[in-house]
Amino acid sequence: MGFDEHMPDDATDTRHTTDGPPSTMPSAALGSSGTEVSRLGLGAMTFGVETDEDGAFAQLDRFVEAGGTLVDTADVYGSGASERIIGRWLADRRPDDVIVATKGRFAPPPGSSGASRRSLVRSVDASLTRLGLDTIDVYFVHGWDTQVPVDETLDTLTGLVRAGKIHHLGWSNVTGWQLERIVTTARSGGFAIPQVVQPQYNLLDRGIELEVLPCCLDEGVAITPWSPLGGGWLTGKYRRDETPRGATRLGENPDRGVEAYAIRNTERTWQILEVATSIAERHGRPVAHVAIAWLLARPGVASVLLGARTTSQLTENLAAIDLHLDHDELSALTAVSAPGLPPYPYGMIEQFCDVDHWRRLGTEPT
Image (cartoon, rainbow, N blue to C red; front, side):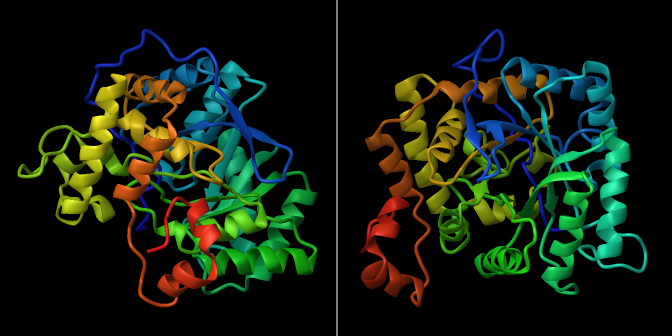
């Protein structure tokens, strides 16, 4: 599929430990929807694949004990197994305040493109059945579909909102111009307006800052990033001159997607980790907490999605919620992870056209 959403990140640094989850969890508005979500969300991509049902139930229990409310899945996670597991947990626990998000696009019925009317109507109904719900709180289109006019997709989803099957819309894995097209088409056509986007975003990959993030800030669209730890790179568990081995994602497959060892093993990565490790040592925390705290402090970010194979990994990363970095620490992380800008038009915009905007993102003009 090409996307590796909120991939689990093994926590290997245990200097900061906890006997249980934090007692409180702050929340943030999901766009202008009136719905609030916990600042840390639970990504369920591992459920039914790397995490069995008992393990998934334990993660969900621990998450809500910590005050978490946003649970994120998709129809393709485990070929529907993730949704089924969450549905059985919801039926057993009957929590009142859990916000369930799921996605459709990459499991269309034969003869239909993923974001078409026929596909989305069937996909939503199938997800509702697996989840055991009458309404999906947040429904994401899992990616742009070049085969389907966006007004068909929006008209279909708006009909599903009016039918009471969806509360709010979102999109995942889009470019800036695609997101702007979606929002402007929704406004001009009287369709339901997306309230949230779900992109990859972390210290190692800040690509959304070119166009997606500015569009979100301009349009009031919330961001719920996946892969906050870059597939485990930002836990500090990998080494410069040692190919990953053992029971980790890269240990099992060093060539895995955008997080592959050959791709991420760069001087920039090690410089980022050096600064993050220094800050972590100052606070007596795992490096992962620093990476999550930086992301929570970025403009537009409503909730950061945590993926985990085990309950202990989830517990460790949930404890990042009470780490607050000061201005100098945030600035140091932002500076060392600056991705650089293409020469045109972004470099020219940074230097001459929108200096205040780039400073807001923590990127000083050069």
